[in-house]
Length: 360
Image 1: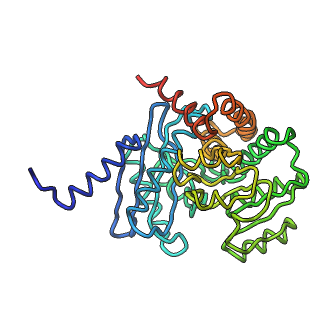
Image 2 (image 1 turned 180 degrees about the vertical axis):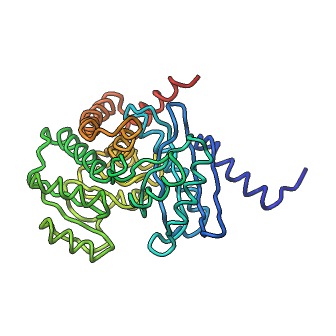
Image 3 (image 1 turned 30 degrees about the horizontal axis):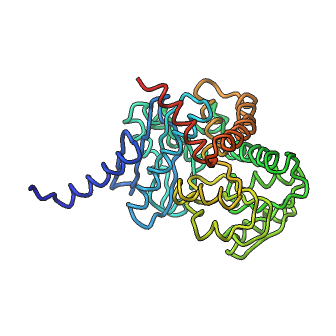
C-alpha cells in the first residue's frame, strides 16, 4: 500500500467532501501581494452557470471556510432550481476580517480568479461585501452581478431578499392560522444585517409586534429607534415565547438543543443553512409541531434579483417573481402535509427533481 502524503490526504479530504455533496469544482485562491485567501465552490451547473455571492468572514480556520462554501454553494443550486431559474449553484468565501483586511486591490485580484473560470461562476455580494466591492470586482471580470445601479446593475439585493422572506412569513401564517395577516403577531428577527433590517421594515408596515436581537448593540439601538421595535438583548432568544422566529444571521443554529427550547409556532428567516443537520433537524421541527419554511426557498429573492441583471435589469419583474415565493411556500406546506414528510425534505425533493430532469 502506498502511504499518502499530508498534502495528498488533505486533497483527498476535499475530494471526498465534493463527492458527498455533489460538487463539480472547488478552486483555492491565494495571492501574496494582496493577502487574498479565497475558495470558490461550484456545485452544479446543470441548469446554467453557477451564480452565488462572495462572503468575507474571519473564519477560525480554512476547514471551516471550506465547509461553509460547500454548504452555501449547494444551497444556491437548490435555491435556483426551486425558484425556476436557469442557474446553477456556486459560492465564494474570502478568509479575513472585512473591516480590516479588505482592499480594492484584493477585490480586483479576486475578480481575476473569477474571470479565470470563464463564466462558469458568476459572483455577487454577500456577508461582508458591498456594491462598491462588486464595482472593484467588475473592473477585472464581467462575471459579476449586484453592481451599482449607476453601472446598469441592480444594486444591493438585500431589500428584495427581505421581501421574499416577508412573503414566505405571510404564507406561513396563512397555512398555520388561516390568514396571512400579521397584525399583532409577535415576530423575533434575530440578526439585523442588511436583510434583517429591511425585513423589520416590511413587518412593521403591517403592524406586527417585532422584537429584534443582534450582538451589535449600536445597530440594534439604531433600528429600534427608527422602527419603534422592542429589543431582546439576551442571547437566550430561543426561549422567547413568540409566534414566529426569523433567523437572519449565520447558519447551523437549529439543532436538537435549540429546537427543544423553541416556543414559536413558525420558523421562517433569511439565514442560509439554518439546520445543523438537514434531515435530523427538519424532522425534529415537524415532530415538535413547528412549521418550518425552507431557507433556500424563502431567501431566494436576492438571487432572483441579481439573476435579472443577466438579461437587463427589470426591478418590477424581479419583485413580481419574488412575490411568487408566497405561492411556492404554500405549495410546499400542502405537499408536505399530503405526502406526510417534513417541509424541508419536500422542498429538497422538488428542487432536485428539476435538476435531474435537465441532466443530459
